[in-house]
Amino acid sequence: MRIESWQYDLVFFVFSFLMLREGRKIYGRQQASIFLWGSLLWTGIIENVNTMLGAYDYFAYANYYSFGGQWIQGYGGWVSWILFVPLAACLGWFLLSFPAFMISDQLLGGRSIWLKSTFSALMLVSWDVFYDPMAVVNEWWRWTGPGLHWHGVPIGNWIGWFFLLFFFGPIYERTVVQRKGFRWLAKVERLLFRTDTLDLSSMDIHRVGRVFYFRLMAGLPAFFLCCFVVAGATTVLWNNRWGPFHSVFPGVGQELYMTPPEGVTVEQHVPSNRIGPQHGRSQEETSHEDR
Amino acid sequence: MKTDNGRQGSERREVARAKFRMAFWLLLFYLITLVWAYLTFPFLGFTSSTQNVAHGVLVASPFWIAALAALLKSRRQMR
Image (cartoon, rainbow over all chains, first blue to last red; front, side, top):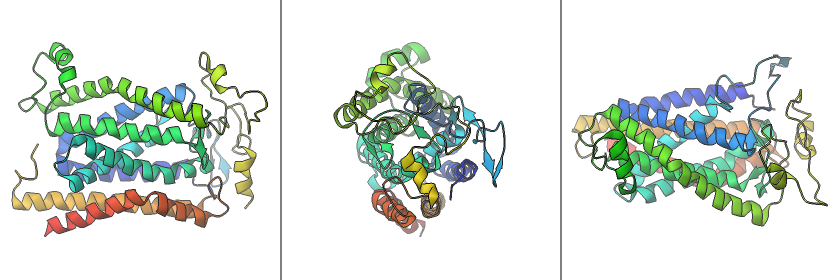
């Protein structure tokens, strides 16, 4: 049976709330809220950029939605969106990364923040290696680019998952938990915040939050560079499947990258504005519904 | 923000309880996704949904083992 996107929405919203509630008791109300808003900002930007660059999309349910066998026109299948990405997808990252952050701290204590972030990032990757193939067969999201695929999911996705928390965790811990700074950012931050940001211990928590959001933005280029190099290398070296769906955001020069070479058969390319789930699925995927 | 060392005994136990619950919710969430994996179509490359579950237990073992370890550790701290 198909696990519907509303079920995904429901479970993810409920568990996000539970994680936030417990996180407030562990880290404090403001600190937990900063983690939540930081996660939404971080994943909202990264997911939207990836969607617009043609890595994947969340539009399988666009123009139709089925509920109890009835089609509901005009409902995109997700309760709410952050631009082109469902809010539940961003909250999903929060509901996993927050406890993973807590668990790495619980198990590794006073070790290096980079070691703890590696541990928690690997934790998340291992969960997603299990979870993402389920998204493929239920069409919660669709892969629209080529890559080294395993169970229908490009390896680059898990590389991205790793770097998501690998960068976010240390920035949060250094800024909000330890109230310290990064030397390479200190000069720019001094200009922006008009104070010494290497020591935030006397700073109001709301200002600490603003410093944290700024540091996340400063970390974005590092995130994209690492993903581009490592995930790009796997695609160039071991690409074994061309994106089974067209991207609805055709980028400049994307034809060079997306078009398979002579002799390579694409499983199925269809316009994204299809009207039903069967139409856009590759034969390999639709065969599962015959069960 | 207070560190664990700066917290009073009762406050520390309350935080340990919250950590315990957070790890518990995480494991419950994982169990729900395992049930989904059993109910839904086989993943690409699989022929049955039982394989989905075996795959979920195996590849996500670092995830649930770490969550379980944190659960047990916070349980000890609650006492």
